[in-house]
Length: 138
Length: 153
Image (cartoon, rainbow over all chains, first blue to last red; front, side):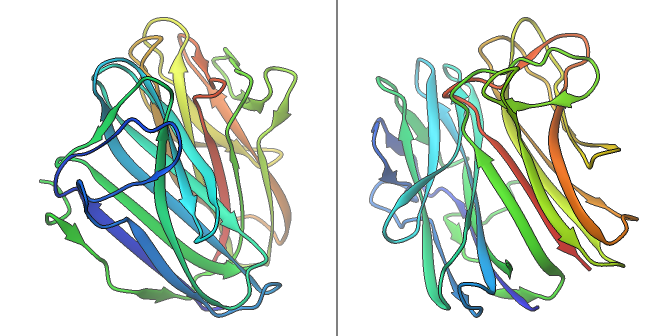
């Protein structure tokens, strides 16, 4: 079966900072674009699935933060990956989610982020993020 | 050299016909698992008595399996070199290795491997961890484990 693959890579234009403990959109700099990908699913619900993979580099401002990446499907944000960033160390966070049971059609997925309480991280201009969506046979 | 032109590169849509089937699992643990072994042991969700992290896929003859695996791991003391792998029921396959500098410094261990030579059938791949010389933890409420298997031409 032929599949569709869509991808977006972002080198952050400027530093996006968040301290939110609930999900917010990961943006390409303050007020910037969301990091999203749109894929046209050709197969029906029983025929194919969509695997979404995402990742982003970030740095903790001072203390230690657990960074969770979510994948938003237009309705719901799903926990997709997390890791702890230690103090001012840089870290890579990866996530993935398999979406099953979707009807044929166009779907947009975007990266969201949330932190453990009392922390703040920067997605800096020397960091990058990506999101990839693949349609594969069920 | 940084690979992406700033501020943004949107890659052009692409298509391929190599992927046939896929199975994937993402686990965010609520209980720490510290296998503490210099040889591969199953990385478990829910501590030492917990559930192995597995993915099952059926392949046809003449195809390969592409495994993509990731886990965020911390050392439990000193420098550790955790290695991530998978086991197909009989064979261990190395996937990735990294270094954790201290108990506090968590690393994302990630990699992929194309496994060839498997006969047609159904295979369950188990995520494995070994930490030669020290120890490594899959940490409650901090880590993630991602295991994806794709059948490819």
